[in-house]
Image 1 (tube, one colour):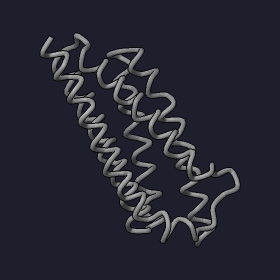
Image 2 (cartoon, rainbow, N blue to C red):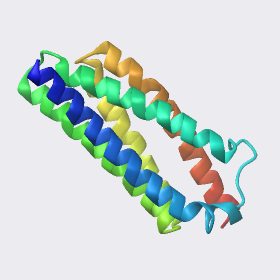
Image 3 (spheres, rainbow, N blue to C red):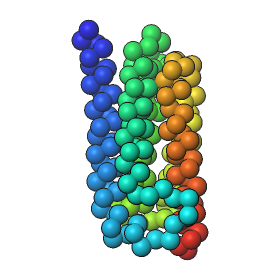
Length: 158
């Protein structure tokens, strides 16, 4: 029982901290930077982003709980945990580079690397828990769309 609760709290803590830090950097750059950029016409209205991210963070939380609860060997679990934490860090790095530093080119590089890390994480999850893998599919789809938007914003504002 204690192990299950600690896994839930660990997963929640990692995802929650990521969400809070990413939100901080996003808010810092929204009014001063993002609002003056030329953006692609397919960009959702700003208020939709928070709803989408809440849902994605919830799915990430659930998927990581499933990974932590699975009965796999220690090395496989360590790899999955490392990739999960790495992609969370890269999310923060992306919001920092895009919104806070206002570096469009650097943020494109970061989000492409984030896409790769998430794909590796999903590959790791697939062999541990099919449900954990499935819960991360919307996240990758959203990141690929965000990558397109980031690249388009770079070109529109070059």
